[in-house]
Image (cartoon, rainbow, N blue to C red; front, side, top):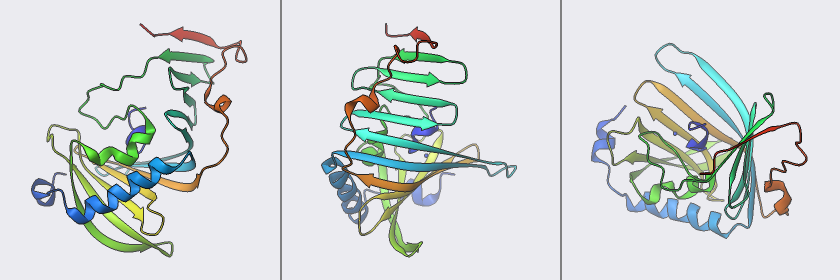
Length: 218
């Protein structure tokens, strides 16, 4: 699940010398500001992984709902609900749900987010960033920005963000790992300010009466 929240991400000479580029900061600040103004976000995404050493590739589709601090992430084989208080990790095939408390202070040398919404402000600490170029993707003008972890012990070395120049919405995120793995999240659909009732973010154990509940809140 850690790889999900890449937004849910080869140390180069550029990475080692990158500073907090004012142009990149202006672009990222705009993304953060616009995202913060949205009441809700609904998006579908595709996660593609590539092993650059042996060429092996995998792909899976998912969906994400965000409303304030609440979220629901659905992937093949798992669903994660956060109702603003507790995290419910539901495994439909095994009919099991694990309940935990969110740990905002979690430390890792991987790319781990305590909440998917943090992907929109990930640059604000622990990273240097640099504007790379403007390009065109599917007829849209795109700004490309690279993030480099300040802590060189991290397992990943660079995150490339493609950002729609007009809407300031993230189109894709690509994380390059030092072991040769590459993960790309493409946002296929991005809708904002839809009416999403709070009930969507609640995992009702009463409805899932045939599900084993494993409570790890301690």
